[in-house]
Length: 435
Image 1 (cartoon, rainbow, N blue to C red):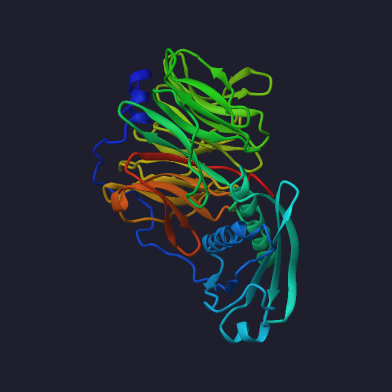
Image 2 (tube, rainbow, N blue to C red):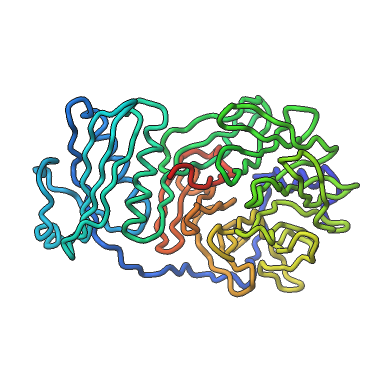
């Protein structure tokens, strides 16, 4: 089915309830395959607190312990109920109980909030691996949770050599009666905040590389126009009010170049725009009679993935700006297939997207350079994946267990619910927001 001008493109981009054909996507591995990974034992001791810092101690410890659990790199151990915060770390005892790492914390009042000191002990070798203080707002203050998340990420780096991604947020849409608004939530599912109040349809949130802005589409004006929201000031800037479509934005790594789907003549094409200069629209795809949309940039900004239905149904392509498009999703001539919503990993050549498998959408990962596709989900309907900054975790919308947003560790296959609700969709994971 060819996608003709505005109405057809809108039907493809906005439909969430279209009947799915029963054919499988060809070439997708139909068995879930994950790695067996050794996870060292990790225990977070009760945090000690000086007078005046007690309310923050238990909250900070709870956040840190959850962040380390959600990192999916450790086997979390429980401290004995009788363990006291003031007790020194007994490396031999914790080693005997299966722990490789022990984290202790101390909080004391400081100017404007509290100071959190974290000390990580490698109990296998009996050595302190990391020791650092972090200045935090008070536990009830703005930014407290994100500051603790940032401290958790440092602990992950101490152990693995790679930073964690707890200090990040996820944008998503919430559908209401005749409306759809954009919200954001912390990576652990806490601190949900509403971003738009259009009373209309808002779609396709996309984070800038500095995490300070979100580009999105809204129908609050005369049509689907493209806006940029400054999350610090709350100010909106109109980026494109071209006639027809202005949708599915994606920032390039330089933070200035924005790719999005827009109407060129009577077709939908991917174009780029200089956000900093507010100018210089450049058409990139030339799909002829077919639609191209949903761009996603490579980590170095030299290529982008996108969706086109030039083979009859949507498939994933990769191209360099000004270059030729190359098909990367599974396709066999004469057989139907459906793949959409690509998101390029921030850490390499992997592209996650959803594909029709056995009559329902599932999350798959393939390489921008070719090779076999890997199936990551097989239960319910799963759509619109977005990579975490670590290039290891994905967030996606799912119909499982009543519906919601889920986070998947692509290494071990562990899945957790981020938010529940059948009206949630289009998640987009931010870069790390604090260090």
